[in-house]
Structures are given as structure tokens and as C-alpha cells.
Length: 255
Image 1 (cartoon, rainbow, N blue to C red):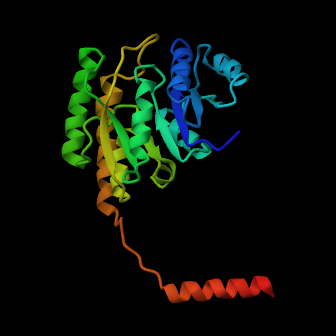
Image 2 (image 1 turned 90 degrees about the vertical axis):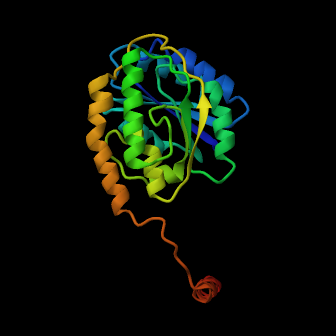
Image 3 (image 1 turned 180 degrees about the vertical axis):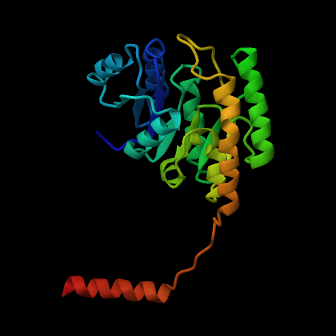
């Protein structure tokens, strides 16, 4: 199997009703792009793992991972990113609300070479009023405090350079602050409008308490990280010393 350009990462918990269709849609959307799919089953209590095992036996591009005890979305993405083989990481939620048909445009934009992250922007939300309200408040507070120039960091649909992701500090809920973290490392982010769909099956694992209030402490932590960062910092090298080192290495190998 050739090295993929894109590693699609899907954190999922109790999403057996949505995963089959989602995986089919990803395969169709990325039929012209070398890719792999890493689904992290975060201690599901339904048939998600059996479903993933059966599909992986028929599709070499699918690489299922499993937590015996729930570790959360950020940990799932972080672990999958370290095991991924693609140059780019594409993340989607496992509930099917993100549309895989948007992936090619995000990947194409990312490959232009001037950004580290392309984030989806759900211009039309297909959620209930409480989720829309909490998301709107969280986005406004985050934007005012972090100034990350990203209108919708809560959208699970993102394409990020793997090497850039692996340089980020790890903490629980870090997936909500990827644009701000990328900026603190000297990277650049852009947002593109994407489709958003109603949940197909099951129920959301997020509510007001773990979506809005739980993020406030994390936001203070990200503000501190950005304040303490001294990146990007330009560094110069001495070309003469580099050439001398190369010549010495060549002489040693010839000797």
C-alpha cells in the first residue's frame, strides 16, 4: 500500500448507526486521493467495534483503534495523529454531521502551501437552538480573547499539516483551540464554508456544561501558552560551518 497523502481521523463513541454511511461517503469523496482512515472507538458500548473490525478486514485503508476506557475526543485525535502516515490530517466528527464531500476543497486549499490549517465554517447549522446558542457564545468569547481569526473552531471538519499538529502541546480539549495553537507556533489558518447536516442516528455527547463552561478554563490556559510563546523566532545558520561539516562527513565516509 502506498503512503497516503491524507490521513482521515474520526473520533467516535457509540456511532454504529452513523459510521457505515460516513465511511462510504469518505471513500467516495476521496476516490481520487491517496488516503487512509483512522477511526478511534472511544470505549463505545454499541456495535461500533465489531462494525469497524468487519470493515477493516475488507478495506486496507481503514485502521480502527480502540479505547477500553473513554479518553475523550482530543486524546483520540492526538493518538491517531501519531500513528497516521499521511502528510495531512483531516478530522471529522463521527456523528455524520460533517459532510465528507467538503474534504477535497479543504485539502486542495491546504496544499497551496501557505497555511498549516484549513478549518470548516458551518454557515448553516443543523442543530437545536441550545447547541447553536452555546456554540455562538463560545465562538464569540474565544475570538475576543484569543484573536484566532476563526469563526467556527467547533467545526470538526479540519485539514491540518501533520508535522504542525505534532508540534502542538497536548491537553484535554485541545481540539477546540487548534487555530489559536497553530498561530502560537507561527503557522497560518484559513476557514472555508462547509455543509452541515442533521445527526443521522444516536445522540450528542455534548451539552451546555461540557461545551461552554468546560472550555473557559482551557481558554485561559491557551491564552497563557500564547503569551509565553516566543515563536516564530528567526534563526540564522553559518553556511561556511555547514559546508565544512558536510565535507568532513564525506571524507570520513570515504576513509
